[in-house]
Structure formats: structure tokens, C-alpha cells
Length: 540
Image 1 (cartoon, one colour):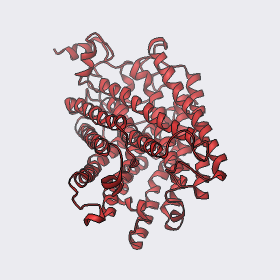
Image 2 (tube, rainbow, N blue to C red; image 1 turned 180 degrees about the horizontal axis):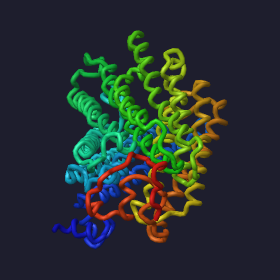
Image 3 (tube, rainbow, N blue to C red; image 1 turned 45 degrees about the horizontal axis):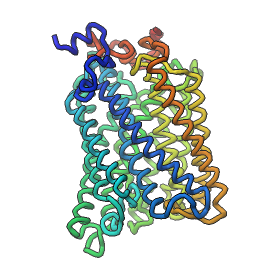
């Protein structure tokens, strides 16, 4: 019998460190790889967050006393690149997806354990190139790398940053491929498609986007490199190229990438809402198919980023209609979550507070997105702070709230320890208040016409900018509080039982933390997902 099999049958869990650091760096255990990702993306989150803090401090004064304009350009570029490509996109798939997908489907590991480890090393390699670009002079293109700025006029280490993103894309592709194969081929007996947890449906839809969309942005970045190095006319009109072509290639991936960030959070919220309402999820099949619908429609809406870029007005009309259509499956989820809460036995523990915060902030972000999907209003709002506020309500208010909710929900399963729930509830409240104080004033700034990416602004915008900067300080404190009590809980937190929340799902049938191979015997599933009304979940 293998060492890992012995550990599984004797109850030794994956956190056992008797083999030292080498056992972590060469592990193929999906749970350990998830924790490697957790540490890595937390590191990048702190870097991206520091850049945001510097920007908000700079914008307290209209003339910006903290940073030089060129440095400010590099700061918002670094913030966007780090947060989008090295935190938001990999956060839930790489951490919670890696940790949970095999256990939720009743498997001992992912289909390709070595490929899973390789994906983490690729992520780290891409991150190192990007960190080199930051330390060696930075980048001033913004996270979008628009041409011909990025190919001809940009300053700094553009190629190093672009290479880092290109490399990291392979990590995303391999992770998505691993999840798809695992979900198709390694489900436990009795676990039919319509008994799968909704988190698995969300991860499946996300994986499809990762596999199909990521190669397109990789090709676009390679073409940027060829034009910058060899002066081949691809995007630069001075060389016979077409700059609009880059926008088509970039947004064909990067708008679906929004759903790579948000779909996993939707899956997390589905788990939290039903668990802390102690009710079957309302409209299971509608929520499941809405995840697939979002993945499909997301590939058809990229042109709404180009309403003012010279795109045909007829193409604009089509993309506008499709952009309104993609809101429908998102609305289905929100309505079904709300219906699940109705007459439920709702408990307001920390994960549930994050789920409720997600619903409120994501709804605000989705509704304001309709203004940007409309040709008439987008002309006025394009490239203003309204876009920044909308994007952050979706990505930070949505994706990050879902990530934190999931982390609080599955932390006892990951570590075998409980965190102080009072502090966790307090942090959720601080984050919600700080977030709204940070980004709601930016809707007003954008409506009044303040353009984004400027290091200075007219004095009449100062009050709203000071409010936004004050909110950012509160938000930063809210993010640091969980970091402190999570670390504290790993040593001093009360021991968690297998199922501290009384939740349904195969992952809660394992000890906390789980054995290396998850299950001593592969489980057989005999009930529907979220069968709270059928049989009370076991609480230990």
C-alpha cells in the first residue's frame, strides 16, 4: 500500500508536516496545492492592494501631492495587472476549486495531479516575470495593454509584464482542463449531473471559459510582442496595422474573464445561501443552467467595450442587445437565492453575511452595467470613474465577497480549526461599509465627467475623492482583520468537527482537515443536493 493510502486509512491528514517543505513543493495532493495557491495569491493581493492605497492617498488632493504623473500611471497599471491576472482570476478556481472539486464529486484527487502541481509552478513563474517588470521600472499601459501604446509608445518593462501574463495563462488553461475531466469522469456512483453541488456547476462553466478564452488573449499578447520587437505591422496604423483588432482579441477573452472571476463566487453563494437557510435551493436546475448560459453568452458581448472605438453602429446595436441578455441568467440566480431565503431558518454567521453582501453589491454592479451596455449612456460614461465603480462593484464587491465568504465557510474544513465568529462578522460589516464608501462616490464622479486614469482633477471633485479615499482606508482595515484571525486560528482556534455548519455535501463527510486521499472508501450518493428538508445534516 502506498504512503498516501496508509495516511488516508490511518487518519493522517494532508496538513501533516513530518516530511518538511520538500513534501509541499513536490506534493500532488490537491488540498496542499490549494493552500500553496492560497499563500501565493494572498501575497499578490497585498501588492495590488498597496498600489491601490497609494493611488487613493495621491488623489486626496486635486493636484496629487504624493506621486509623479508617470509614477501614478505605473501604479494603476500595476494594481490592475496584479489584481486581475494574479488574484481575481485564479482566486476561487485555484484555491477553493482545487480544494473542493475532488471531494465534492467523491474523488480522491483531480484527474491529473501532476499537471495540477505544474499549474501552480507556472503561476509562480508568470508572477516572477511580472514582479521583475514592477521592480525594474514598471509598466504604464494599464492592465489592458492597448495598442499602439503598448507596442510603440509605452515606457517600462512592457514585455516582461506581458510575458508574465502569457505564462500565467497556461496555468489557467491547465486548471480548467483538470476540472472538466474530473467532473466528467470521476464522479462518485449515484452522483448524477443534477445531484451535483451548484459550486461544481459554476466551476464547470468557469473552466469552459478558461479553456476556450485564454488562448485568444495569449495570441494577442504574442502579437504585441512581435510588433514591439520586430516592428511588424499588426496593430500600429503607422505600420499598416489596425489598433481595433487588438481590442477585438483582448476583449473576446477579457469580458468572459469577468465571468471567470464572478461565476465561482456565484457557486460559493449558492452553497452559503442554502446552508445557512437550511432549505433546499430554490430552482436548482435554473441556477445550474444559468451558469452555463452565462459562459455561452459571455463570448458574445465583447463589443460593448468598443462603442466609442470606431465600431459599426449596427454591430454596436447587436452587442448592446446581447449585453442586456447576459444579465438575465445573473438575475435568475439573484431571484432564486432570494426565494431560498424566504421562510428559511436563516442564521447570520460570518459566511452568510458575506453571501448577503455579495448579493447586494453584485446587484448594484449588474444594474449599473446596463448603463454601460446602452449606446447612448455609454458615450457619456465611457472611460470615466463610473466604469471604475461598476467594475469594482462586480469584481471586488462580488468576486471578492464571494471569495471571502467561501474562505470563511470552508476554513474549518481546510485547517481543522474554527476562527472567532464575532471578529469575522465584524470584518464583514467593515468591508461592506468601507467598500460602499470607497466606490459609490465614484459613480457620482463618473456621472459628473471625471475621467479615470488621471493623476490630477478639477477642485470641484475633491470632496467625493476624499470620501473615496477615506472608504479605501476602512476597506483596507476590513481586509487585514481576517488575515490576522485566520493566522491566529491555525494555532489557537477551537478544533472543528467534520461538519461545524450542519451542511450538506460530500466534503462534509470527511474529517477536518481531510485525509490525504479524502475518503477511506469511495462514497455512494443516494440523495439529491441540498436535501435539507429530507434529512437533517449531521452536526459534529
